[in-house]
Image 1 (spheres, rainbow, N blue to C red):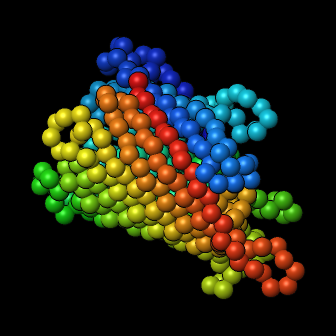
Image 2: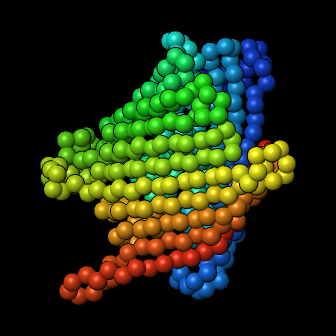
Image 3: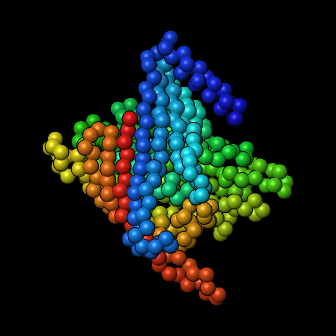
Length: 375
């Protein structure tokens, strides 16, 4: 797979370099995410602790080659993860070649690419710059991965069926086993011809995978018989034109990384949760008020797995967690959005006491300002 990926990047670079002979000019763009946050209670750094951060910047290149082929290149620029080192790091987020209608009603992609579930959820809510989708934020799935996708569209735009085959390591980690992960995505739209409610839909995804681990003792890297990394998501979308949108998402995970025992129903680790996301414009008439919107998001999470505590702070809390944010946003010009919101995180924390574990509820309240601009 690594050799194929290298070949793909070489071909992509060649196509971009020679596009003036066969196609139009490439489309170059980008997006910037920034946020400011202040703690309204003591969260370990003192009350009123605040920080400003350029969370992420992104460079995007799109190129069309004739009628059926195109390419996409996306590079993420993010702050270094080290707390005592200032600077930036670069990650290849997307680099794929796409073929449209090579087979009727289908689209094919090969290379580093987004998982379709995140594309659909983020587009439906439209406020990715404020908060990420649950499985991405909690670390259960990465936003993009290296692999192959085939998307089939139902005639009349009544739905989509897609299959993705990916490495499983994501776009931030190396592939450390021989297994490939499989994703089946299905979307149904009952009213595709209705101009007001055409985007109402139901989505479902099942992710069948294996953890990105190795058995150093035996050198065996094929653990599909006794490891598990499965994900299931369903969602419903209600949308009225561009004025009102609402999304409800439910997810469940099955994880097992113990390479010494056989999976049974008794020793599977599980996590589940749901999200409610809504957005409504203040006015429907084409005035400045139509560019003001109210939004809210509520998450409930029941966690039974332990991921990397340094990377996923939710996991370090243990127990159940609830997350709420709500606020107001404004888009004065196309491509620029600014939002202010109140954030509340509530977690049930097991205390490290001798004897029976005591469960206490911890609460974090904050105010934040988020900004995104496209260029």
